[in-house]
Image 1 (cartoon, helix red, strand yellow):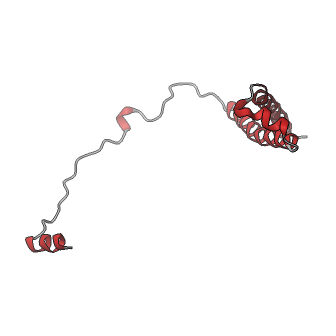
Image 2 (cartoon, rainbow, N blue to C red; image 1 turned 90 degrees about the vertical axis):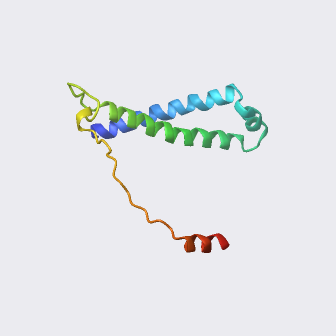
Image 3 (spheres, rainbow, N blue to C red; image 1 turned 45 degrees about the vertical axis):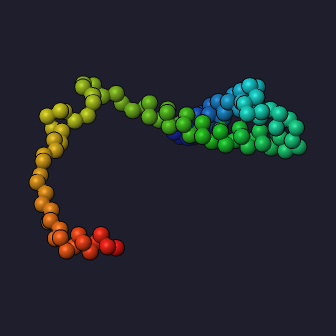
Length: 111
């Protein structure tokens, strides 16, 4: 199996484990009376499964993205973008505007 697929599977498992811990804490601390809702409903197990699964998808994606982005080579030397001397500096440009006639102003006031 390719290394990238192994890395992906490993991080998906880690993400779903984090999601399981997250959902367990939500239920343990009874956030928004979640434990009461789940324990008193006949579909409570389905709700917990869906909560874990959907959070698992999110956490697995974040976990994999974090690992991939941390694999980038570190550049040596200064960091920080464009030097100050090369930045765009705005300049004032005069703009001309036509003056309205008295007749035009009177017509627009009536309407």
